[in-house]
Every structure is written in C-alpha cells, then in structure tokens.
Image 1 (tube, helix red, strand yellow):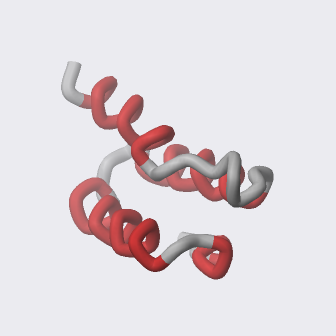
Image 2 (cartoon, helix red, strand yellow):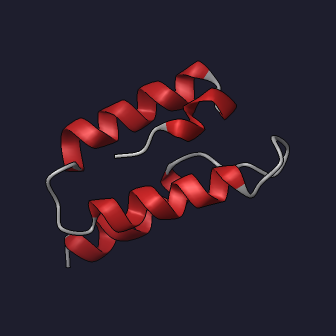
Length: 65
C-alpha cells in the first residue's frame, strides 16, 4: 500500500485513512478505493482536496448491498 501522498495531507486525514485501513483493508475493493483516493490527492490542490469519505463511502455502500 503506497502512502507516499501522506506528506500532502493534514494529520487528521492520515488518522482517518489509518482507521479505514484497519476497518476495510482486507475488503476486495479496498486497493481500488485506496488508489482512487491517492490519485485524487496527488492531482488536487489543497483547496480542491476532499476528505477520504469522498471516495471510500461509495465502496462501503456498494459492499453493504
């Protein structure tokens, strides 16, 4: 799991991501969601960056169907 984008994030967001790893890291969709959020962070300015829920919530909701 590539955490190279952590340097671009506020500490609180890193804590949220670590919690997501703990809760969902073994889910089959997790790597895809992780990479999607990683790319979002790398391609966004600080003003345009969204919280992890922007990506992860759609995967969690799909998983619960």
